[in-house]
Image (cartoon, rainbow, N blue to C red; front, side, top):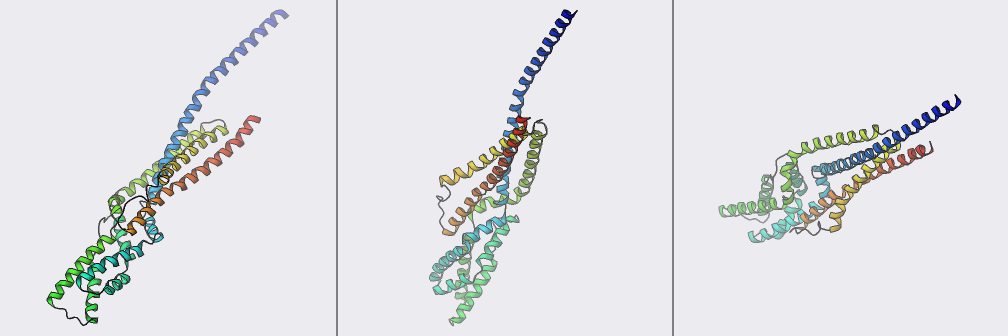
Length: 306
């Protein structure tokens, strides 16, 4: 009887070991698939975060009136436009028989900043390619009349025609100086795409939260949750840094050929700022990646020592 009991216990032990072996083998097979699936989710998280960084940069630069106006302030755009307007008017003044001081005085007193800001407002309100010459013409015509009176010049019919011609030509020069060619190309799309990009950002935020929630709540072990989140954030940080690094390192922006100094400085400052803003997203993703990495290390130590 004892021998039969020993044999029975031996068989039960062998069956138990076999079942445990099969269970471990099955567990190993499953564990190969799960890391792959979570790695794929980390990749999609990186991709969605990168797209969100692109949309956020566009939203706060290209689609922002304040960004354009701040760029103009920081690059001395208004003073350069005033100087260029004065130079062009001086050439026209010589051809019209006025003194050069007249052009310098008028250009200095004319509120170029207000004119440019009104022009920028027209784009962001949907009225693209609109430059109001009326106020400029009225002020210039009044300045010519005052100049004629100060020089005791009698305004005849012929003189009146010359003044009208001068004012019209000067207003065309004014419109050319105030207009921003490269901004005119994108200005007509700003109003239409503004709502679309806000909706896109909302969708990307929802996707980010959804993917993060799946990674976090479907992982049994906490260290694995933070590991895959860290992968996604690190990938997003690298992706957000590559594009501006390539563009800025190539030095392609300063090589653009633009005729006027004001537009050249505005173009370089504007687009350099756009690409530099990607580094803000990179820094945010990098900080979050570091936090998740530290959390991974913390919980991995607990898991290993358990």
